[in-house]
Length: 69
Length: 190
Image (cartoon, rainbow over all chains, first blue to last red; front, side):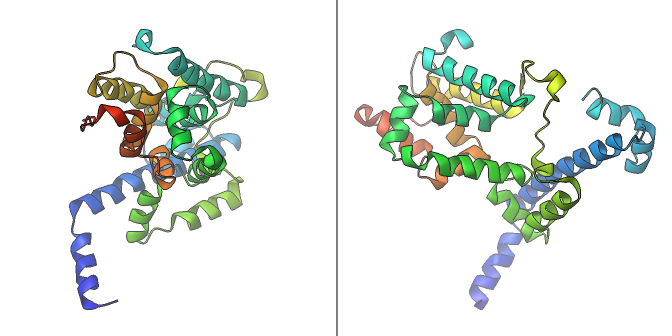
């Protein structure tokens, strides 16, 4: 990689758009990962309370998001 | 809003709902609208897609959609953005699938046999497409909302469908070019 393209790339990294897009994508990835783990825990008989405790959120929050599924 | 939909547009939307229902998928998403659109024949959208040579690449579009779905529904642009942070999405998906099975990261929640067949609801992505199709029709000064406006909406809303379409040469510009060739002038939607 030449110095010029290297510089251009580093400048690009400071572009808020790139950073914000990565954060938004990360949030979506996180949502999917959470759904997989919550489903798995429920399948293994975990209570909402136990799941909430591990996730560090309230039982109501988890139940509202994943309950009745 | 639905009263302004043409017969073709209604058939596409109903087709998407029916496909989801049959497959036990609970939420109709933008990609389901695109899949139904690819299936639908005789409408303005299928004319545009045929004119752009997509007829023989439909399978390739379907594959692109299912590949993206398996990768947490992220576009390539999003996956690249995460790679920039050192997050290897394919690697994460591979590990999750190892533990939880193929398609674990697809987010597609299916009903069990017991509950399959119930009417799926529209997800935000699908709602956005319907709403955008109205705006696109207004921008084109069309009085109705046709399947071509659904297609145009799919090309402009950021996401997996737009990316899959663009990869096959189907963009807002190319579709409007074949649809409104004689109308001339730039009538781009906002």
